Image 1 (cartoon, rainbow, N blue to C red):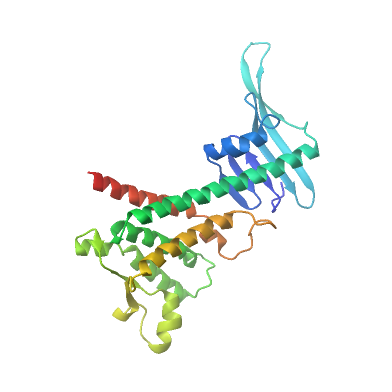
Image 2: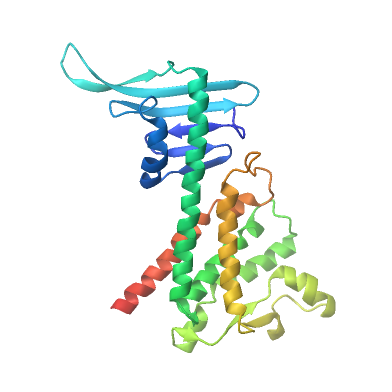
Length: 287
């Protein structure tokens, strides 16, 4: 099967759907709401279920549909699932289903974006001030947005990659400032400038000064009354962009955007980590 922007693959068992260059496992709720009406009854039913559907329209238009039918063995009298290839639909039937399935896929992604916004916004609104939870969320966010620097083909020099590794370790240690303070709320934290700021804004005026070797390369945060709110807003905007990059454009998927994978691939992991951090704090507060 040729993979291109027009590709559609539906796995009926796992609810895993590929639309162009984007693969998502559809939640049970979204599957029932958006995909079942598209597939039932021609493509999938209770006793005649879809196993896998594949469609591509690149150099040529091709499709294939594997199904299982619940049939009776007339010799033994027992029922079993029989595999077979479904070839009855016309090409018009196929095209209609593909169009409807793409719309179902897009609808399920819009639900994901709404859920993501709700999750993160709820946590941010719940945790006021520079709490340990909020700093951990920022830590996860800053590490997530700099993952690209650790890629083998990242557009950075060997020395710059070393500096990024140093910065990322400092970011991992941000929550440690709460242990020193012995509290769950602090007025400000020290955040190191990243290697790009060091190279473009610090080094030209401080020639020969090593990266993060001086106190002036650390900033008190928040430095202004609205800096904390801007940080939260930037994080939410980033997450929204990452989710939307997964979605198709009117001309297909954004397959050729540099750095897309480091934004969109681990986004679910970032959200789960944020939820986990909040759950731990909620449990501690309740005990």
